[in-house]
Length: 100
Image (tube, helix red, strand yellow):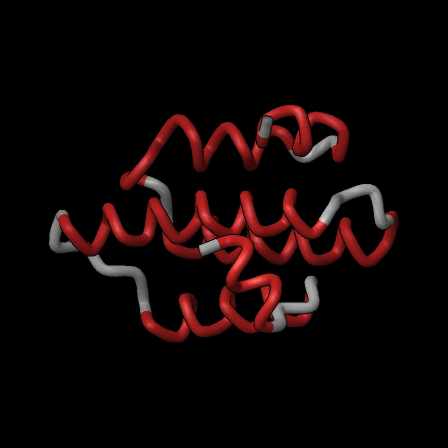
């Protein structure tokens, strides 16, 4: 699971922040979470593309919940998270079809 991925990375504290606080998490922590994922994948290649997409999906799920509660995440942060996804994994038509 996602917790195991982050435990292997040694950044499970950030995972805990996102997981435990849900929509109370600061927007910047969502961005940090994706930055950490990007850096770890590029540095170690221990994360699969699917791991990265699962992490991205969790971040976006929280962002959607925040929006539903009237506390939308800054669009610049969402844009940066999206760009980090596409620069971390090869998001092509096959990848999109498989994940959606």
